[in-house]
Image (tube, rainbow, N blue to C red; front, side, top):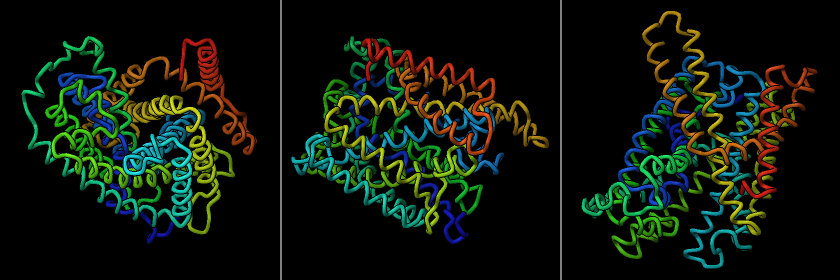
Length: 475
């Protein structure tokens, strides 16, 4: 493991959390939310999200402090609480979600550049894919130079992308009109939005997508200079990003009506600012988005490699994924991740609609790892593990973990059965790597309970495959 000079301090850990969460999602938030919900439903949705995600942030903080020996975050908690196969599935689902998210970032990055250079179009032209490939491998070789160096660059880009976001909030606050915000407050004038409950449910996947990365510091806990900084970074990063997201979303609803916002092209923040100050506003947001995506790509490239490496280090993933180079970078995990990103970039040339649907699928896939982390915090609270001398703290943590678990179940419900079945289609093939790792240790692949769980995953995958074939499901 890295020496003390290569360890990550609090500032770098916060930047990993913020850099992972603030990518492209916030820049498209006004349109994404208006497409699903009116102002009233948006406020309810954010209130649920604030409570749910805050409890999830507290869960990661509690687990970082109570279980310091578990130093791979999302993946390690699922394994410790619910066995090897659930641990592997968390790592596998998290990893797929992360690199699919990077594909979306590349497409959005070059779609934004297409605003200035039409040759890049919507981010899926030949020129855009070539440009994205150059950036992909540039980031790849930067990360190969060392985790510490890449984390420092991520810190710089995280600070830089805050500037246009803060400027947007200041300008939008001045331009905010209460009568615009309160007109058709519950969306009754737009029958397509459905009931308030439907609106809240439909916006939930968007809120999850913009918060993915909240566990960023937990994944890097083994590389943290101080173990206690992991929990601090998670909560500080979350609160800061929540404030940014809510202000961007709510202030936009006071500048343009819900139908106007829903009709904007993404990045829709550019359209909102252009509406207030003219063309230079769109240019400012475009530049901010390019910087933001560059930082997010770096954060997620680091996270993708780290999650595979952590799994291989304790034999849940095959041994070839734990190979490090001289700079302590998990080189094989990095090559596998970026090779698949390259493949999917090429696929976007031929199937952009499939790519967009896979983005929602990526969001859905990360819900399962979040659920197992919350459930593990609930489990150690119920058992009283590490709470022997601390009964009052145990009760508080139990309540938080219970709320986080209920919230995670709600998110899976909000995502819908379609994405749950399609997730099974991506979870099932991962068993090949799991079996390889078990065979390397000379162990049986599944326990009896895991056989039942795997059978359920395979059944879900078969239903999804049949659904895609027959047309009752679509990607």
